[in-house]
Length: 55
Image (cartoon, rainbow, N blue to C red):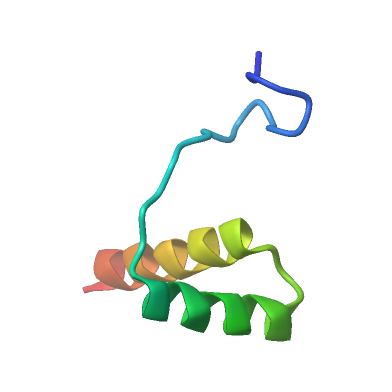
């Protein structure tokens, strides 16, 4: 069971420290794509690992 009512069973909640400039870039992209910042980070990571697995 998830730790709270907002976290899905398949999701893992954690704290992330990130460079302010990188955060602002992710935040801008998230707004453009209509995603939360967390989902945008997840999307970027998934793209990275998908491309790594294709090599």
